[in-house]
Image 1 (cartoon, rainbow, N blue to C red):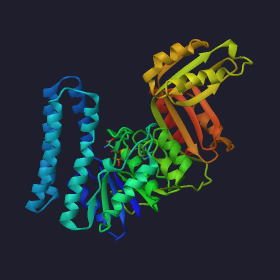
Image 2 (image 1 turned 60 degrees about the horizontal axis):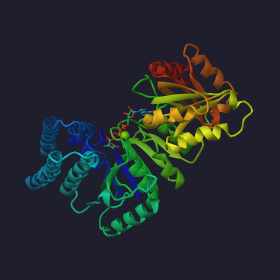
Image 3 (image 1 turned 90 degrees about the vertical axis):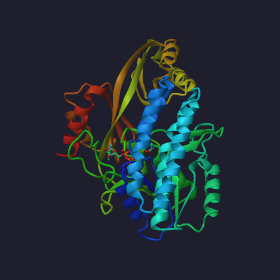
Image 4 (image 1 turned 30 degrees about the vertical axis):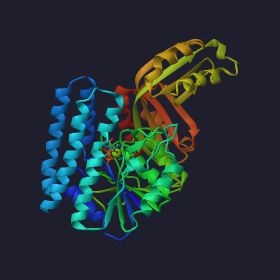
Length: 440
Ligand code: ADP
Ligand code: ASP
Ligand code: MG
């Protein structure tokens, strides 16, 4: 059994959806097919939810009807038989009618979660209707809301997911292809929730781990993980092999191609992850395994929206227990720390979630003078033994000659060197590092 996940662009047009059907039926292997929403739909659903939240009911409804209308030509060109078109229109209209009804109700936060998952519900139903037309009897739909459960720490409840998913598969043994939704889950109270933006990758790796499959394939619109952000830097190259650690660091530190935490389940259960390009299925893409490939620098990624907090205190000199007190403040507000650097009289810490920033500052002021810099970007240089390779650091510093650096974290892991720069210097930093480290 393998898990295949197709992103929004890969199912973004009727022709692409048909192409995905061809890809997954090219052999007779059993597969779980995880689909995202058709590209653009989730963004629009988020906007509709925002209009609703702000009380602009007419605006929300107008946008909802505009979105509904985009599905008409999609269905017309995806399906051939009138009976199947009728089924597809009925399904799509049911979802849109339900959202229409919700938007007429008094607003409460949970409605946003219920609205935003409709993209995946619709894409999977349309895709399965197409599969039924082309390959009758080959596929069944299993709703993610029936097995994808989070626990109290908002992490996947692996034991429950395994048990529920296996039981659903056992009820449908006749099918070779099991279609399901990415992104959608239930929280520990059973309420509808999601795995955050880009979460379908995470859905796929959770399912792969829960079933201990042979391989997880992430099919997207580019030929694997590139060595730098292709949206910012020209001439980036696909990386053929990455270790779980390297891929995990790149995903967490901003490589948008993978959801930030999606490598964790695959790494835990040692399941290879292959990133493939739907548009170029023969290209190698990237294979992520437990193997460390002893190369030097493999890739660079950037994560925006970072806040740096400096706590300066003469009491830190020769004092033990100071860092514990500082960390306890972040623990209290359940705010993860990304980078940390220390000197004898100060410690600098970065966070990417400023929700409790004001309270954190107030609490930290008990221990020293606090300074805050917002709009920062972490640039993460990833590879095997990056910090111990001779000559790498001098290349990095040459690349940074013209760039003011707020923090550097070096030697914390064998895979990562991280820098903190102002967000407006991100592009310059990525380009300069690229030419020094990859185009020597
Ligand atoms: P999907 O809809 O298939 O999930 P995403 O848009 O989430 O696809 O991710 C693919 C996109 O990630 C690429 O089109 C590319 O622009 C962007 N990207 C950012 N960093 C990288 C990187 N290091 N390597 C490859 N793609 C990257
Ligand atoms: N549809 C969701 C999003 O756009 C999940 C995903 O595509 O992975 O974020
Ligand atoms: Mg994605």
